[in-house]
Image (cartoon, rainbow, N blue to C red; front, side, top):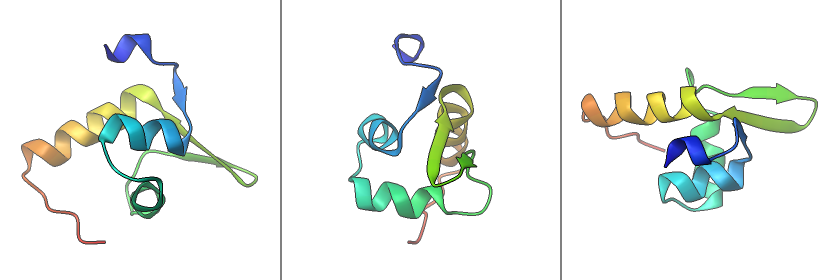
Length: 66
């Protein structure tokens, strides 16, 4: 399924993939170590590093306090 997604995601697309709201996703995007690019005012989230980051968080059973 992941390979059906574009290589880069918007914050809205990443939020939908993660199953969270857009406001919460903006908080997550600003966490240290989150895999994102910022070009001017635009945030770009690369698909594969984002999915890997999600998996790492799940495997570590981390609760992210935001």
